[in-house]
Image 1 (cartoon, rainbow, N blue to C red):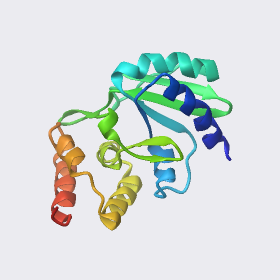
Image 2: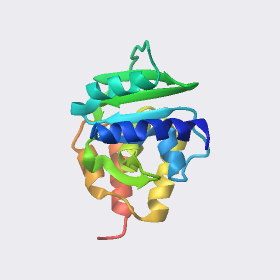
Image 3: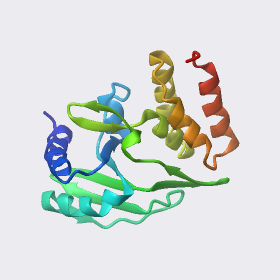
Length: 184
């Protein structure tokens, strides 16, 4: 088991014991789903009501690092921890600014769409939108291909995203994906 999985194995029971609503995001979530080939850190999304409690748990496992947010990010709760040699980023109310306003990457229990090895995974659909907003085109392409090939798109989550301010290009791409899906 590599250090990423060892660190998740330390976090998982502590978050479960505290009954936190959380989900793995970013590249490690994509790796666990077989979409990415590598991950270097751990990105965790937490429900807003659980963000503060996660701080105490993660401090018991490592150290808190100073952080500063830079545009386009407007995340309400963002912390970075060093656990072993790994960086663990914790986000709640993860927000991305763009020309049309601020998009909030939603997260609560309905945005956990899979559990692999006991690890809750945040929704691909949410990352599909967020990665478009931050210009991570390779990840957008990979997620879109995966969603199209597997045909397991959570339409409801994409419709929720469309209810937020989005640039025309992102809105058009999400609508195209929805239109190209087979009927329910």
